[in-house]
Image (cartoon, rainbow, N blue to C red; front, side, top):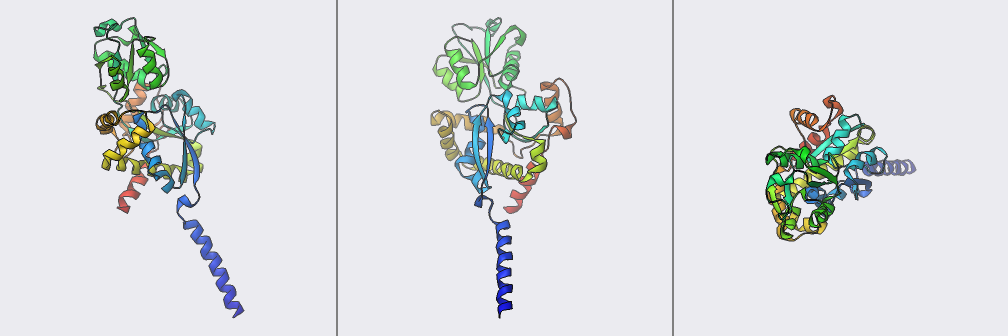
Length: 319
């Protein structure tokens, strides 16, 4: 009898150990930090994943940290944050040799408008010699701003780019006359119209991804489960966004100060560019390398979409 009880105890211990391994991920949350360059509607996927508890269901406790897009990659490599989301500056750094990879793409093409002060800029050609407020020189909104200028037949080199900061700071800079033009995404274009400014160009004809996810090579190799859980959460959030317009709009107004009608406009305009699978084709990656970087790098050193594809397959199988 004692032997049987002993075996039962051992069996219970083994079963408990197995259950601990198979327990839901959220039983012990993994803390991670995600850097966002600004509070904007382009980050709606992250806001939804946080607000709806999707991150927690994937076993993650997520903290958002606002960091200048140029510093996001360094913050990842230094271990200050787990992931960064700013596409242009980070992608350029990866192509130039940073030990990181693009692992997920949220918006393949950002929706931007070139907004100007009408009392100063009566004709697009009046922008020559004037100032364009940008987040950072050669950052995403600067590159898109140059494209918007070209769409109006203006040589971008004739317009002086001034590094101002995130969309809220660019908003103030153009309203107060520090700069005469800015390229901004919704809802800032509508908010600027309410201040008397007008859009003279947009959206861009050629897309530049406005939001993604970048991870250090070390994390991909040593902690793939964190990446897998994060990407599953983003896929799930995107599906929620597509299926729940009203609730998504409500969440957007919680994270970005705006009226519901402005959030609704952003939803209807921007989320047409929401990636269905979180990836880019090799041709699209090559195109962005040619456009955003001074040199090329082997594709396998720039992107790893295997986690995005695997997570999508898991979700489709679970349906």
